[in-house]
Length: 531
Ligand code: FAD
Ligand code: NAP
Image 1 (cartoon, helix red, strand yellow):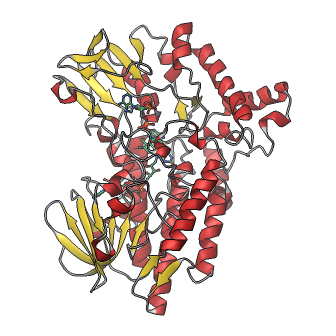
Image 2 (cartoon, rainbow, N blue to C red; image 1 turned 90 degrees about the vertical axis):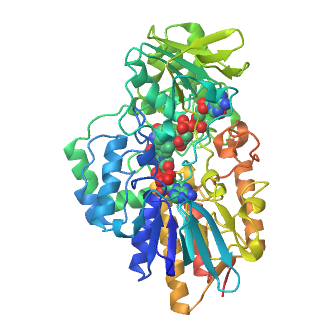
Image 3 (cartoon, rainbow, N blue to C red; image 1 turned 180 degrees about the horizontal axis):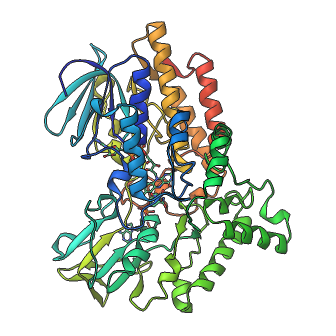
């Protein structure tokens, strides 16, 4: 890092930060990426727990912006493992010669806008600072670990792990008894592998998860060739789909109650057999109608009962909330693992964990002594990484104050009062409700187009207007209110972090959102002031 002025500072070296760097270089601007980790990769650098892999098919969970890149890279499995995705991201960094503008192992602690010079000063934890014109927060939606404040947590005498900060050399649980706290996607992926190694595994479940089968498999070379032969079309279909993926899986255009019971079962069976998140595309109203939603929920519960032999355990593993209002999990042997004699489930829905002791976990009178505790407790999602940076905009106003009652953005891209600061996949954009690579590419390209426009027109600053932001926040809330997303205590709502305001943060509907962004750009960046 040098104290010289540069054009753009990008915080984070995951998919978003790397593509942003590549794009701004294309505009002839100087850029620096600052990354807290000791390597590139973001999510895929940090989340090295056993079983970590994507839940969007690999051929789609990858960059589409460069045809040569997508033609030359060979994915091996339907859902790539974490090491394979990390290798891919490292390949991207090398292929586009990105590393020379990335500093690793430095955490951005503050970003301050100077009203006089209209420059940002970005400071890192090692007291370095850099001045720049633009700041892009590519800090990730799921990068700030949520470590619950359970009494006695730090008194535990054994080893503790968070899935989002897993040791690089792996962990050997042979002959150990292990506690896993949490039953979201990270737990669903890791528990079967941990249970195949450890002597005993006790899973502490606050809310059961809906999981659909992955049916992961090696990719067939002729299928890969067919996709590569038509990759552009595939990517276009993804960009037009509600969830940013599904090049090969159609979304059923009818409601669940528009067909009879037999047809409904047949559709669910077909999707269950196919595996993956496209299960929720079985009918077009599963997140709009309670009654329709219940048919899908009951279907998954029936599948849990088929897989788990002990009826009491099957019932405890069966969610009774709205299906899909929390991120769905994708399962390889998760439910079946509870048939193993070395795996126990402790339901803490009614009686939370009282304390962590020197030797284990206590829930009421029940004490479970363990050698290791795994916190599969997720993230302070969407706003956590940004909130951990002291960001001050015009007149010294703090972003944390502006967002005290929940995040406020215009298009999920900018915040009024914070000129030239952008958020990638920020709250108020489709973000985590989509294949995130599609959402990231759309944001990076939109921001780059805006920067190009500013260079061409000689503008120094761009800033969302308070009224455009206000209208956008109201719009996002109104769209969310049309859906069943508010129906459970999810991280989408901030409900997993005590004290966090409950506001539905992402925006459902990627194609409508993209159309709106394009419309704003075509109308000379309506809702922004370019000065
Ligand atoms: P990240 O990959 O999170 O990168 C952000 C980077 O910013 C991190 O490396 C972090 O260290 C850095 N950073 C943050 N704050 C600072 C700071 N103050 N200073 C310096 N650096 C900082 N999405 C899908 O669409 N499909 C999937 O299958 C999928 N699977 C996932 C599996 C797991 C285990 C997790 C946790 C998430 C998954 N996601 C998935 C979401 C995933 O986060 C995104 O797909 C994508 O990787 C996000 O890329 P990003 O660059 O925006 O953020
Ligand atoms: P998560 O979905 O937020 O799950 C966290 C789990 O920890 C939940 O079961 C939660 O219970 C529990 N928990 C949190 N605090 C607790 C406490 N104090 N006491 C007891 N239990 C507690 O986190 P995640 O599993 O890491 O996944 C986060 C997101 O990352 C996913 O939704 C997904 O988007 C992405 N991801 C994807 C994959 C993939 O398959 N590709 C894998 C991992 C992660 P409650 O539900 O009651 O809050």
